[in-house]
Length: 88
Image (cartoon, rainbow, N blue to C red; front, side):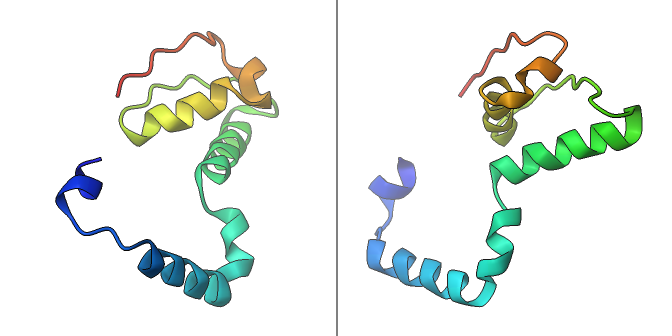
């Protein structure tokens, strides 16, 4: 909220930037974002500890968002202790 209250927010500028990004890198966008991070973390756990290995996770800052994806997605059963505390 500080960005919106302390700086000039120009939605048209961000929309234009988004369109340029989509045009130049659209095929890569499916590999970016929180869902992709969670998939990558599960793949790494599988590679290191075997297929369908469990994941223990503590997240801070952006990690709280990743943790909420773990808890609210199909990967829930892979957590040893699916209780979470998210602080913002």
